[in-house]
Length: 153
Image (cartoon, rainbow, N blue to C red):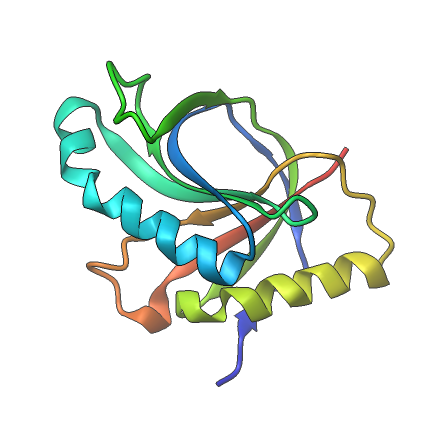
């Protein structure tokens, strides 16, 4: 299966974002699925109190911190105890786009890291973002779009 990743990235400014998430630490292969499972178990309860406008993950590879979360229209009134809320500040990012199943994200992310190294692109200290552009419950896997956003100065 070939990975459909745009290797020519564009620069964007990610806006300040209301973000409700669960955080896991450790190897992403284990922590990411567990974080998304915890998140989806309470999705209906969150959607009942505040408009969910999207989903994204934030991660730091060196520290092995992974956050799975929902983008919200506004700050939530209250969040489940094991969840966290923050107003994510956003900033400048280099955007790569993957079209296809989420199972291809590890390979696509690895390729993004190779591109950054080959092109000597300076990355600022900050969270990487995976922005899930469409809903896997209604979109065929082959048509899923994920933006991989790299924090840059």
